[in-house]
Image (cartoon, rainbow, N blue to C red; front, side, top):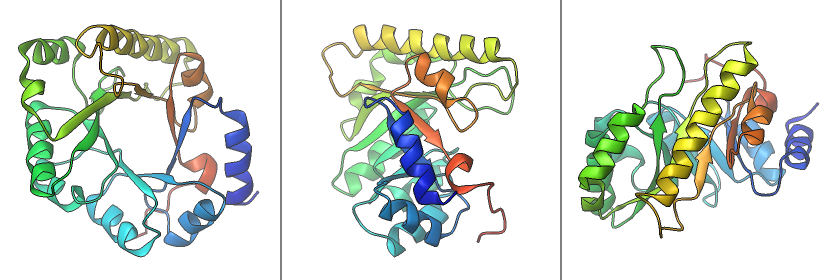
Length: 225
């Protein structure tokens, strides 16, 4: 099945309120172009240099989402054009995004990445840590950052009950923040959870954005420079 056919099938399967992010990290520009020609406009990357190279080479109406662990010293490379940073996982990173956005005369949209998986390798805020940060009001000092919602990755496991529990916990936090700290802010509307192996379960649990790579592009090409 071609990339075009996979994109069409996926979009037919997704509810209209759920946004598809095609995770193109490690995949060549030719495959991204095929997905673009099929109507896909949002792509996810996790390496600043790779994303910047693709941004320069591909159509400018593509909306690039950064979805990987982002080092503060790399923010400056993507700040001029990134559409959404899904992996804002610390006060220091948020402050850096705000500073680099201001330098570029922009407001950058972010999702707060929450650590919901029971795996030490996963990044993100602890729920209590995030709520303490928001209650302090420090987020209100960031004038060039717009908080759009939350992102999280479930545990890599065949235990669907566990994955569902993690997704529902993230949904619960999203709902609390939307009616609490971010009440009256309609821009706080995005819950990004679900990937190729668990997106259907994520949608059942309330996801509004899914990040799908291998289902569209096949297995990652780790040889891509």
